[in-house]
Image (tube, rainbow, N blue to C red; front, side):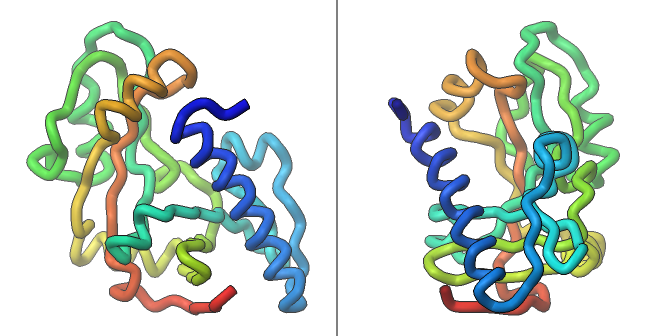
Length: 185
């Protein structure tokens, strides 16, 4: 039973992943779901024609015409530490771009730095956009993110007791600034 908005968002995300894979199969692509290990440790949701793909779905992102990428995740541990600057510095993110960082647990690089997918599929409002990871990295390295934000207080309080992470910092880009392929589904 889903009791919170985040539970519903999680279930919607899984449903969107299935919808995207079914759509791609219908288009003639060879789609193979990723293993549990690939999904949890490498941010690979499926393999499309032999290439590792991460599927992202965001209904709030569609409102702003943005795509979002996980830059760093804060561990649930409540032990104070000072490695936030190191992790974020490693990803070349200015601390001035992040809303009120907190030091209640150590930070680890997110999927943007550690994910093994070479392609991203973003599904938003009946549109599916395909980006190569390389094109996103090239854009970010030359122009940076449109904005960088951490989760809302409501999301953080929900995550803290239930998941390994209690906070996430995401970098956002306008969906049309990077070359991509678009399908209406």
